[in-house]
Image (tube, rainbow, N blue to C red; front, side, top):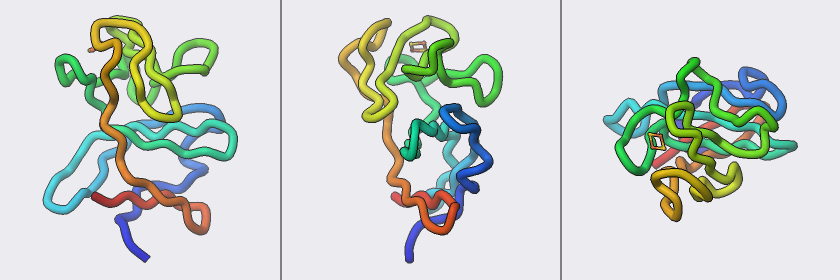
Length: 111
Ligand code: FES
């Protein structure tokens, strides 16, 4: 068993998103957790081009159709599965993915 407890899977709406602070070693990191089907994806809440948080309303990281992560300021779109930016100022760049394991209905993160 490894990793720090971040949240329960049920703390994040199905096919939705939520914001948390992750304890990663010595660092506290603002992260987003996205659920898509059975998948759980964790990224730093920091845009690759200027390091700004992506959610204007806390925890709201998805576009209206819930198909992509969206920057609320620039409407940049990122793929949920790998954080790759498909449009916007940071097109071609990636969100920083955090190692995450789901065990017993909880999400654990590690460096
Ligand atoms: S802050 Fe980078 S796309 Fe909006």
